[in-house]
Image 1 (tube, rainbow, N blue to C red):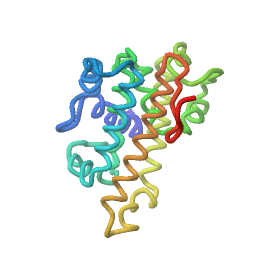
Image 2 (image 1 turned 90 degrees about the vertical axis):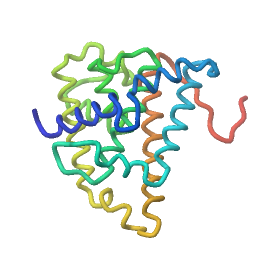
Image 3 (image 1 turned 90 degrees about the horizontal axis):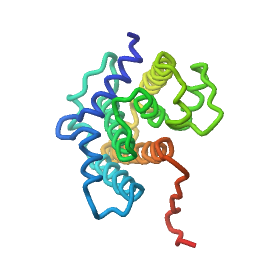
Image 4 (image 1 turned 120 degrees about the vertical axis):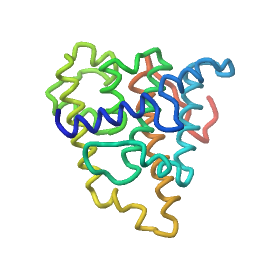
Length: 216
């Protein structure tokens, strides 16, 4: 198995199974599914993204988990954990929509949610044509070996991203506020990943209100 594929599998396993004090993605989703206060799944996902990104903004949250994830390549402290926490969020969103986090397509879409806008590019580079919106339905006919190719391509992207000095040394740019800077970046990244996961796993069109605007 290639190193990039080992990286993404380690990230997914840690996120889906739980890391340290964090429960599994399935356990997290089931907490929201059992809560009758939410009117529907979209309300659950709104709350889920809000609370999970709030955790990441807390200074030292990821650093406290930093020693709990072992990866086959050397990555900056906390970066692999950040991806694992994002994977946990995406897995919970998939579970809320009724998907099994052990399903190959769910694992692949989770990785595509983590890499964000370049997801379609990664899919095309793997030789797969997606004529419709990327999501569970679009990957129905994709064979398992092709999904592995996508996962490997995402792994290359993540390892490459980790090697960029701008990512690795971000907290050193503003040393006095390094924790807050890192926390804010992690939170923003997690929120973006959550929004992408909402789109990828939604069974249909999703209407998301724009902050600051009242319903029409």
